[in-house]
Length: 160
Image (tube, one colour):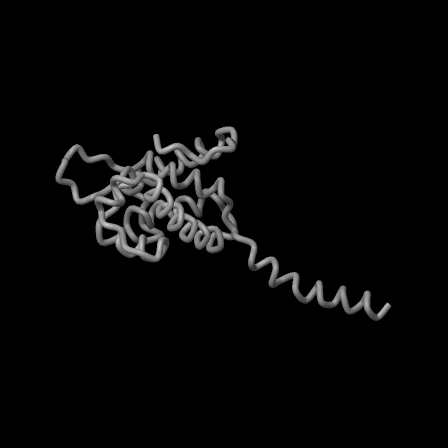
């Protein structure tokens, strides 16, 4: 009886710790957000643009992200010419930011996507309620919902 009681006490005591280690964001949420950001990215027709890849990332941003996610810096050319690695880096950053925003919004998925999309385009989680940034955030939310509604496949998302 004492052993059973000790087991229950330990289990109940560890439960909050186990709950905190569960990631608040799923792989499908990350994949949908990554694709939504790619689809909503402002596309420049300028071959001399300072933005790289389908996600339109600045070189100085890429340095920090690649170092954080891959533990090594990539050049813009490496990022641009390797869609699989680019998607890996973007997924890493999206996972981090969407996780933060899901926690901050008490798991309100739309609010979290809105905040993460605002951060993606401005570096701030709020303030995207008018003009270009509002339009961009609304496109991301719309694409995110479309991606989430798609049937699940066994393969990873394509780089289209």
